[in-house]
Image (cartoon, rainbow, N blue to C red; front, side, top):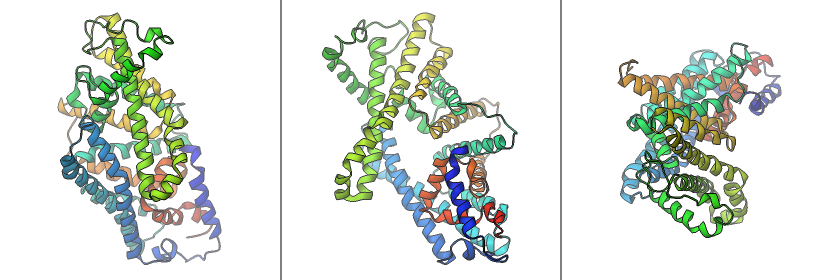
Length: 443
């Protein structure tokens, strides 16, 4: 977020100056400065309920889409009821506990010590995160820990830049994304058992496998053939030599057809996912009447410029990876790790259409996770019991410390996540425990 996070910082400053007349000894307890209009118990309950409701809105569609992709677009109702729904409820409970334990520990700390101490935000968040992550499924702890660690690492890097301790690299996140995606493509092709979790689903769907096309790829092939009569006069090179491929390639169609079909497949999937995340929450939040009334704006949001750029990003990611791999097989006459890594690097150049820092951090965290797991399996790195839980706790504490004392170094998307998750209840804490209050003479 860096310099783009002036809005949260401005909120903190305006709040502090509006309370500049508060006396020297005011605000010693949590109910004096944080939840002035309700008791501690009510504040905890509101935060916990807000976290649970927000968790359902986030995890229910996310796990449903993941199940659909994992089952190659043919999910069974039984699996949705027995696995997807319980997983969404478990993750929602985890988020609820995280949302409720943080204010609970904050209130306890304010009654036993200085409520404005810098340790308050750190240890309250660390203990709350430690307890809540134990509720989450063990298979998801590593993914959560690495993602939060990525956010905390970026916050630390921005803090170091502001203090002159680290250089500011232009387009650093985009470069990190390209290198990380190329590494994941290399592992997914040559060591597929090393890539686990959502990264494996993402690569299987948006990059695909050569010898086992899924339902969407077969449908994309029909679209490719159906558009032949219209596209061939305008783009004759697209349908020339459609059956020609190198002796190493395993895909059934020619290299040119395989690349074009991959673009169509990823483009359609990206638009579908964008539509689901646009229309489904809006229908439940607005209701049928308001949903129909706002349908035009929702269509513009789903299929407007940002939606098309997202679809182009994934389409070119797929086509670039497939096309580069086929090209390298033709000119080098072999299929090794260098081909796969370079193909992934070419596919990652689709970042010119859609650059998202959170997605870049996610891909980087999955590449690091894959590398660490590989190193631990081969004995190069030690396996530390409970490391994922500890990493998540410390990283969450660092982010909450940053939200309290260095909000201008946090990414705006993480700020939005904190406020939406707690429905604004956590905002009272961050506004009250900011050092801006100290600068205004408020204890």
